[in-house]
Image (cartoon, rainbow, N blue to C red; front, top):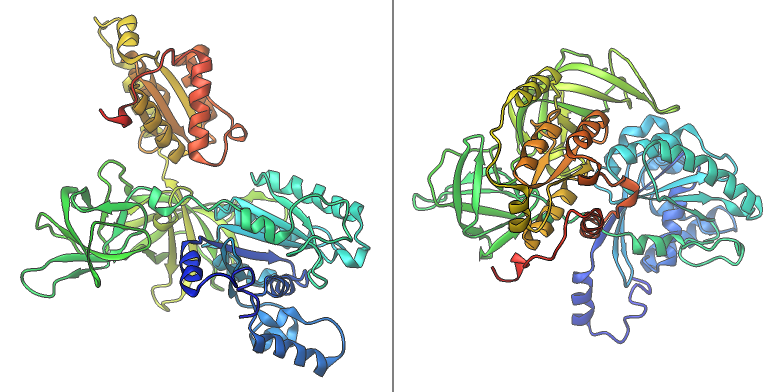
Length: 585
């Protein structure tokens, strides 16, 4: 590989391989309208990063000599299909891998034409970051908004907007600012903040891997520099443990194990685990691999788990953390990208492939379709090819899932046509189906409970815990809630997380009950539950209620948890330091 070892000449092969193994990998997707220059940008990025082989460069030079003199046609590096080269467009998703001394990259080059929106969704489904291209001459087009919408739908937080073909407008700052102003407003409507806008010329290489002298007015990072600095997505092994069973491994009578891939989290020998749907708790006896036994396993390792108890477990069952259990339900709400020519209709039955199980599923209702040109939610009776809509679904037996925003591995699924075996849709689970009448009934029951006046005074509870009762209201940040709980617990606080699951609609009342016992209650609520938040504030009182805005909190959960701790101290909830239980008790 050309110069990919630049800066590594003094390293031995062993040192180079060891350093490469330690590097993390950033998965990114490129998107944009037709002829915005996605394939050319990727080719230029590979070229400038010295990530091309000699034969690839020779092929580019030969192609240039055969057609005419001029710059290299970098799009040929990714547009590999014959139809793509003939039409000058990208049709299928092309993947390219390269590395720099700082990081490894896996790029998915996706089609720009609206006809291939489903291909873009496929390429973005595993991405950690997105590069959206906009031709500075054409400005923001409907497809630009469509791609940003899908990126937001798939939970991609880090977006670089490459305003391309700046060389064709004389590197005009005014032209760049016009695109940035218009597109920023649209991204904010999607809830995307912090997008970075970079003026580039993919053909000439301006601000792709090296800073351009033609844009002295631009002070931000070049594209490659930005991509090298994107923080990694929350590590899958930091999530709750999920192990979908793929098959039962029984090579002889003395061995029974359950094989599969760790979808998220970490499991160790001796850990307590819960088996779903049986609901039985057991312990991990051993973790077996082809190389031998391991002390622990984490995503994305494929292993065989042996359990201490003989249980009835089969393909499609799930082994999970007993303290952080997924939803076990038949009904749920999901966002679906429709990928088939035959429309999706309510009451239609499909096969749902989720983790390692396949179940029959019925589409109960279509809540709305998202009109990509205006981002309006439109009522509809069916979803057409490339439509994105929110649907209510019911499976014929319970599935074990987390919301997609919290866990991609257990929050995603595909829909299969039962007759043709064609993949017709891809879905992201939003939440279990909300039943307001059940929540209201539970809330009224809580309000009717009469509590005897406690003989333990608030002063005595403060003396024991070192803090006053309080409610911390967090919108959608489940992992932050558990991280904050851990920090407060280590400080010696009495603390409890209430996550918005079956408790939906009654979090304020549950928090009030725990307040009476002197606890700090962390409510992880739906971002849209404004009425619940107001009730919780009324119950707790302004001096015992903290609801930091999403814009105040860092994306890193650890930093955000420490910030909330400081806010609790400023509020007067935490009055004195407690012994850190994590240090030895």
